[in-house]
Image 1 (spheres, helix red, strand yellow):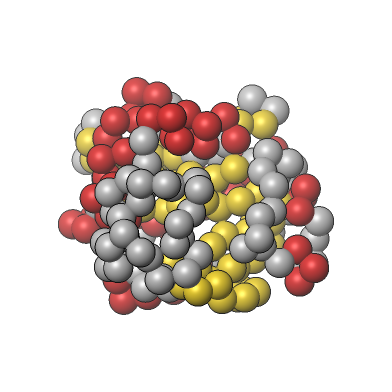
Image 2: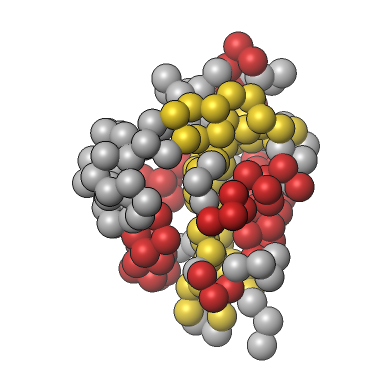
Length: 186
């Protein structure tokens, strides 16, 4: 049976949280965070968050905030963007379980979010991609999808108030990984 891409609903929260904390590090996601992220994904009744299912097992997920449902923070460079922040979605996170990588699941999740955010009215999206991801896969897949680098931000996830209990899988409690701010226009 092929991998199925479906909207992320609360029935998949527990599995998504477990996978996110396994891949990105302990404290990356919890129910409260994922609940807030889920609200930010919905606009005009359309959900921009998706999961990849192997039968009923979550093997990947994509979290995306609808255009107008998020605010640029200090790690954003809106003066370098060719579109207004209110017209851009925010591609928050794309996660695929280790045994399922390299099969196009990350791209399928991204494409599902692109389709949803276009229907919501977005003209593109911003993301902060993990430069130290295994084999730099995050930046690679986003670049292949048409994303362009805006700016690199060292220490993006160090003492991040959005993830106060985060422990990076590479750096530990004091993360020094770089986030590559990238733009994808539709």
